[in-house]
Image 1: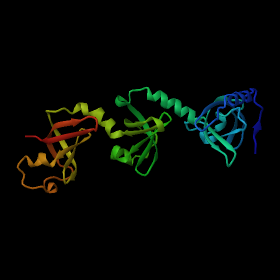
Image 2: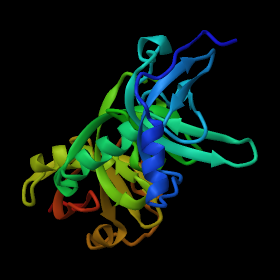
Image 3: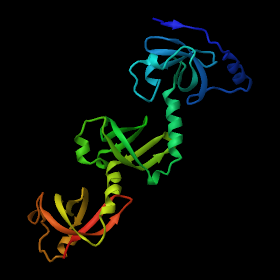
Image 4: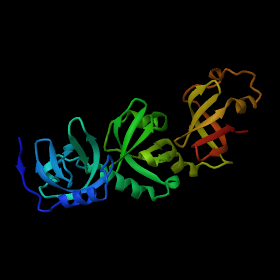
Length: 265
């Protein structure tokens, strides 16, 4: 049932005439100025000066979570609206305020140096191979392999953790991020080539042993182990989880967040 209806105080039809004059066809992803002329139970009606009244679903009001749409939806509210869909079959035009906000936020964020940027964001929801994170209303994807196991087990949506950007696709407004790389960049300054560190064995693979040093996982490759004249390639017979061994760093790959170590003399 219609809650209330008012007539626009502005003649947006003039805007429609201008569009017709220049033979401009409004299309999906256009951003147009409009005014809210009515609010119903789960959507608002918007006048964009077109032949058809547009529909603004409540879930397209804001990138932020809101408890009461009436806090933002006011009659005669004038703003910018993104055209999400022009469905000829249902004779409806669907618009979004959230889409406009996302575009402006993305453009603002795009001006920042992504390569050297660390953001703090929180998990929004789980996906099949990773999670969506929420950064000031923008959503980015992080694979599970780029999330420390501790954070994979945490379900606290209010927990902010660091992320580094791995890939940006401007045309689709998609960003892939890594928490492991962000944590690595934060801690790796404490790990330098030369000194001897005490590492803890966390997993044993056929190609080497992963050890944890100051919170960062490092690889002790099998070739470094065999250099010590050990006559076996069965690493499980040499190490077990929890063992502590003295190591030295031999190389650091900052871009991929990897550190290689060798047994200390």
